[in-house]
Length: 393
Ligand SMILES: *Cc1c(COP(=O)(O)O)cnc(C)c1O
Image (tube, rainbow, N blue to C red; front, side, top):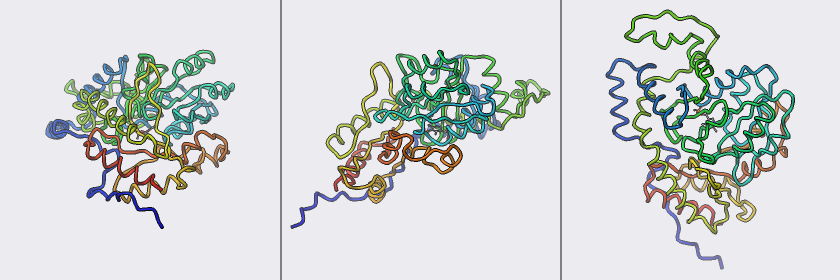
């Protein structure tokens, strides 16, 4: 006799979009006001956003740019990488991290991550250092801080720069210090799914005056500082082109979306922390590994909730579970397929499956469930019911 089915979980009426941002009326009003103001390009609202962000992260400079990809690219360019210079990073990140290294003229050198935290393993970083190593590029995965004490010790010992990928980590802290402030640069993302969004956007933070200037100049065609004032009411200013720069500036349209989100960062963080706890409690006992709690004396950014499907115990692949969640109309993500298994990096750098067992373990099992502060309790209960059903073999 077949076992009686557990109460069937029905698909939601509307599809729960993964990473849908919480946009409030005050955000909409600010964008509309910018449109009416006649000044929609780079201007006073970008400046205001930079000031607010600088204050929030407690750094001397914050330079707004077009994306985190641009932020990483410019930070690495500012370090003046020479062809063949190596930058050590993790395979458990978004492809933009590696592409930025490559476009800055460097060579990405991957080392494995920790299976529980998904973060780069400092011991493996130290082993991978060669005469060509110039920088370490840690990624604070899901907003969980990397071991910045060990990484800064290694960087100091070997005279390496640190560029932090803080795309998930606006709120993250390690031993009371904000992520992004441990090395030369911290790079943030305001992509649609991130903890604060301008649709597309990014920020570089640094305490170094000269580096901040260089990033600014590189972000606007390589035109010198005064170019930013070209359209102000001080009258026309001539500019000089001092580098072959990029078009990586942020606009006031984008910045206006951020101005009212800045004071809501902590409130949104609290809501995500609540959802996180709710998921943890509901998923204990299911055939999956739930993310471990934040390490002692750190602050987790709660950007992604990434259980690992216990595929052996379940007898189903992660992709089958994703398919079931889609059928139940729950949006999901995968962060990430390990980058060394992506064709371009495998072909170009000779990486193959087997090189980074922990990243591969995660890559085969991970999925991301909705964690936006926009989620109602009912939405969260729908996610919980659907994930339970998808893991009920
Ligand atoms: C989103 C993301 C990026 C790229 O951010 P963009 O703003 O979209 O360029 C880089 N690294 C990580 C880890 C990310 O999640």
